[in-house]
Picture 1 (tube, helix red, strand yellow):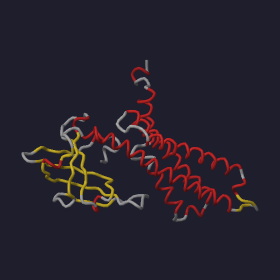
Picture 2 (cartoon, rainbow, N blue to C red; picture 1 turned 120 degrees about the vertical axis):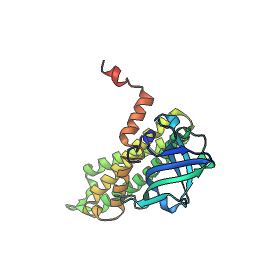
Picture 3 (cartoon, rainbow, N blue to C red; picture 1 turned 180 degrees about the vertical axis):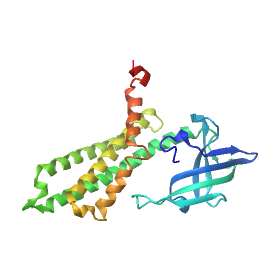
Picture 4 (tube, rainbow, N blue to C red; picture 1 turned 90 degrees about the horizontal axis):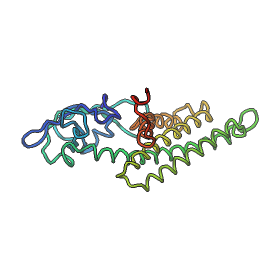
Length: 259
């Protein structure tokens, strides 16, 4: 939701309990292929407060009356269609997933696993961009020699190579962890931070090495736009670092730090 984003507990859509079901109302944004699928899971508040116990999730057929979709115009991610959905719909009691008010427990685990899937994707994108940039540096001649013969090109390529392989190791380590633990949630945040940062760095470097050819519509240009998105969401770089700091480093609170 526009006013919630990474702050899942700040959603404003609401579920009102009725005799045989629930009335769901609100708006959701950035729903992947929302108008093209058969069902959508809506997470709404089912209590007035913003605590973890206020969120519930419901599975809703997209054929239900009361759903209105609008496609989102966006910068990149051309392989995905994103939609906003305004909804005012009634569902039966069996539409609820799990227990009322317990959606956050499941969501937090799903979000952590999603970060590993995205980290893996970003590592793959970064390595493919690195390959393209390296090949271009070897064949693009400037002032009578390949640009890749200059340390100004070699060093950034070597740095991206090293960091992307570090990202890959982080992904592989997280993939072997127990997904139900707090350690996994923390590690997944760090993994997404590292992989999204260095996939974008690979795209930026590839664009620089390709020069004006990289600015044309095509592989490098699209990857530059797409990798930039993942530095903002689904968990921003800042929130990723904040999660690692709070859970792994146990820093002093703001009130204690000021003393």
